[in-house]
Length: 416
Image 1 (cartoon, helix red, strand yellow):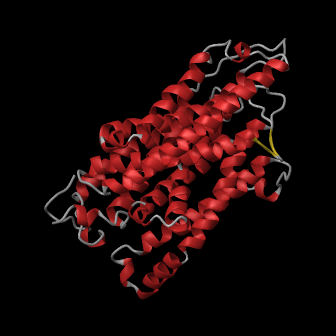
Image 2 (cartoon, one colour):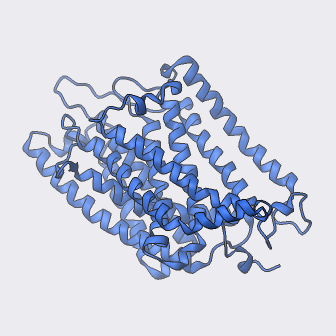
Image 3 (cartoon, helix red, strand yellow):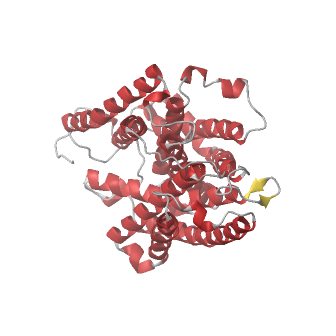
């Protein structure tokens, strides 16, 4: 994608780096807008014809949208956790990737809110959750925290915009960017607090469903175990998603953007957290099986209906859990880029599978003797409207990479 000839907008590029010709940039933006427009059509159909155009029903009020929403929020944990490691734990090397983690976080949380805007069916009434808040609902706390944390991410993203080469020449914007950088440890600490609570509360929602033995858990004080498992799983996969996005960006740009030692730090931390999560998740699963057996719900009853067979449990904990954990903990495996990326893909896939299990499968399992199992699969409208925000995020990342200084090591790794 690089070109020796300077595009007409080269004055807007970060200093000392090269970008592709503007016509090629527009071409790839136009390509992405193809599936994006399909998603817009699907979204308008949901709003205009109501949610009966989807395959959601009274048995499955939580479907693809909610599972994807929870998964995207977990992937976005790479932003707050990388910020925590950089500004609170003070791992200096992460300054070279924390900017991109913020961009990814903005994209993930904007996508999560956009998906909810489609899911509620009447987005013009979305403000009701703030003005007519149900103070007894965990989802109220989630809504407040997600909205506040998205605002924090925008504040963290703002200095990157102000450091655009042309904007930064203006004294006011230069000074604002400088002061925001100085306040970043405090801003990051606020973000960590907000993100920890809404990540946990998203796990607490299925955990308090005492009428659903598949999901219900005991816990510590007012929090079920799922509260803490959701936090741990999010910070275990978030750094892997940052690594994965960085690798994709490097492949598209055709050059190295971040040094290997930075990637290795994130991968090693992610591996250790993933092992801790797997240990606690295994203990939770064993405890849950014992308790469920005592109340007359044998393990086989939860996996009696396809497609939710035993393979779900094996895949989540084994293939998408143990395998990436082994790779991420092995120094030699981490140094092999292809193997590392496979581990990141498996880890990120595992988080989506876990969120699908805790939302869709949790409601699918019959709880009464007269209940019937009803299968669910998303239709094209649900897929298109969900992926719409992915493609929109791609455009944001393309613009950020082209015009903002998000990779401090790019110039050093790619001398002219």
